[in-house]
Image (tube, rainbow, N blue to C red; front, side, top):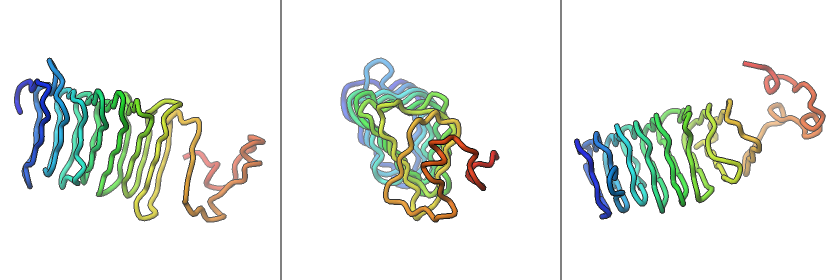
Length: 193
């Protein structure tokens, strides 16, 4: 799609092993209804996109690239691809955001962030590195490293981190008393990198 794509209708796309490329503003004049990507290799937005929702629930085989702000005005944003590259904000005004990357490490350095009016942001990948603020204090952010891999948080502005159903070996743990007393943390946990 090389020009502006407008209208309130739903848009369902299937390109098999081919790519889907939006070079013009999607919903720039009139937001689209639901956008659904059923099957694709690469999915690329080089400009902004606005629709009721965006759903790429079936794993893409290439890269999902967001080059301009993607807004879902009433529904969710679901991105599922081998590689995910976010160079702009993704905002589900009233909904939730779910991002699944099936290969390599999901690196999120999104200065503009992820915004979920429904207060749920879920990230799934083999390894996850987050080095930017996203969400707000009311959001529930779930980071899931597939197959017991790693999650790293740096400069996220996160006030609370909750880890559920995860095994943490004793040599990688710190007691709540040490945190409460604001003492220097032992070993690798307290060492600046």
